[in-house]
Image 1 (tube, helix red, strand yellow):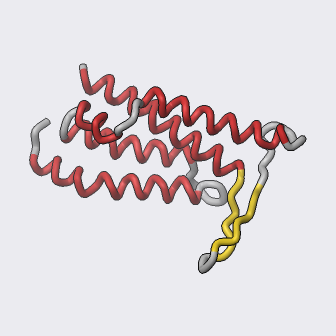
Image 2: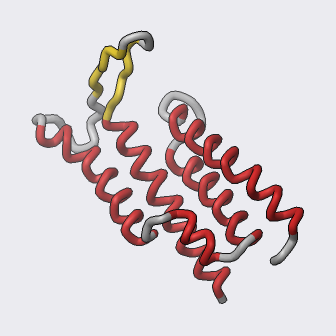
Length: 137
């Protein structure tokens, strides 16, 4: 599609959709959202870019092979289950660690966040593989 209106709108919407997807990802542990819906939102923004421009430009925008990104996401999700196992806890047991950051206070990071980020990456990459494959046809 070669629509200047769609291309201009996409340039404005893509950063907003990606930021919103990260917000949904980060709030998803305690409230509605999480890695799955965040990944779908990110993929929808990138699919919009592929429709407005073309799939090759979208792949160039990503700077990474989607199959490699899929593997990284799967590895992160698996790692979130193996960390507690290495500590003598059950597989996928939630484990938390607090960091004290000056001026910001305590930051609590855990294996559920690692799992959600892995799911986010897997969902976004597999959805983009499907969308870009269909768009190239």
